[in-house]
Length: 577
Image (tube, rainbow, N blue to C red; front, side, top):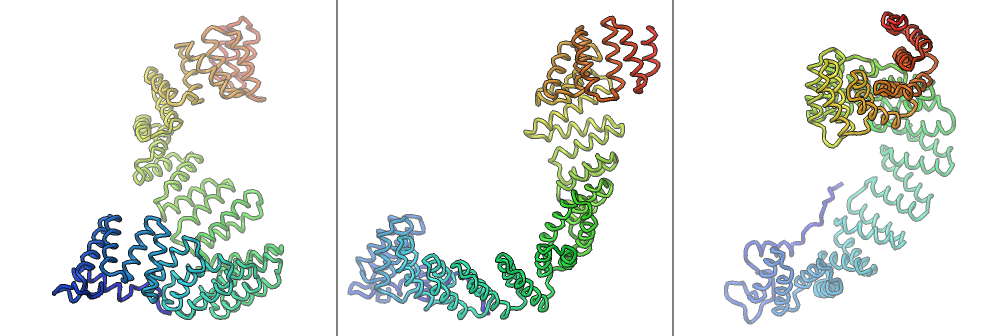
């Protein structure tokens, strides 16, 4: 089949005009006149000059000047069709539709056999709603310039919109005669019949397509889906079985699996899904969507996990250079609680495609979950090299270094992360809180307080920063009013949390308000469950002791020992030392 051009070919007349302008001559333009001058080949000089002036004005974007020059051309020769055509185009650009229409009618009256004039007429007529005229012009082009597929498609759309099925089919027939056999024409006929509600004729077009192009599986797939939607499952299965005899295309296996699943024969359907997964005809994207669906279902239906694993194994084998199958495997491992397996799968995916920050992020988070801090450090380091502007990776490195005892290294990474953060106050506040924690751990309370204050300035509702800062102040007995203020905000933001209630109680106690502190420490014990923590119990004893309730205090301290508290320290309190 010969190649179809994107644009219609330029007529020889128009080419002559273009060349004449480029060369500075105008022998093809304008009729001979008594005023013709020597050297212009018998061409009217006034006409030539005006036309040349019009083209220059158009190049400069001077629409008014171009129109004025073209009108001068008509003064020199009122029967030159090209001038009316140029005027029509100018008027159309300015959306002066009646004037454009009048000009193009005159051009066609003077030179009816010009496809450019016919096309302009069609476009203007369509804009004005003169659909019969547009149809006549486009049909002329179809009959005389059938290689102009764009105009033919416009005619096809027009006739379809006008409800002229037979006329639309005639356009398809003409295109097929011009360009030769092609599945596209069958599909066009199919779509036309379906659009007009003639389902049986639409199915016949697909059947004809199957006969003429047996390797085009899209025809069978479309046919099967239509039959299935009509409840004609038996016909759909016959159609797909016949297609399978012609071709073992994996997409046919996939469609057959859908039919079998609807029927309830899931075991046979899975066999066809596996065959589809081994086929290169089924795009990886489509296979991956199915595998993801299996993984999502497998989270609830444990029996599907084995099938999901088998499909993922096929994907990895058939697409060894693709990373996404490893992402799906990681998700399945995560559902099964196998964090190590999930991390290994993501690392395999990163080896194939290291250009996905999301994959690096997920790998780092998994490594954190399994507390493989060296892996977190290494993964975030490699990710940071590839994505140096993302603050999350130096943040992860900072966390890893904190866990491995490299406080100085952690501080460097966290400061780097903080410098990269843009308009993410919650994240920035978390980073600042981590810097405050490092300073606190090394005993630099002034610096720790400064970092905490910055963290709360950025995000005043950072609960962990509020709680930790309040608690550290209370432990030191420093700025008790600030400690109480911070702790009060924490319990308001997150009520019922025993740790936060303990902090508030201790802050109140240190500030001298042990009566209210007792209320909050008892709430903390209640909310801590059946086995309260040693710290909460010890604080309760201390608060009771401050209130003079020595026996009750000793009971709480003894309970703190049983909960794993510091025995020697608590024993000293019990003994009154």
